[in-house]
Image (cartoon, rainbow, N blue to C red; front, side, top):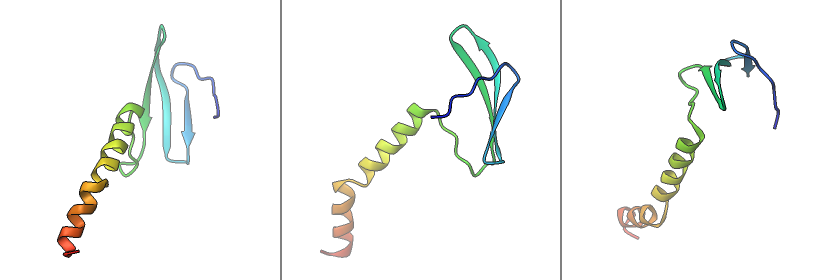
Length: 73
């Protein structure tokens, strides 16, 4: 993991097209702004993990059984 120190209104750039700017620091909270192309998904980690879990469940045994029924196997 790369750890960087930034102050309010300072930014970092990732891959030439994603910019993360520190907007506000208040106590133990940091507000960040993210500028990225529309085709680059940006999620809070807890939401991303929920999406991944939902995808795993959707691809689970029920999906396999439905596919087998569809194919007549």
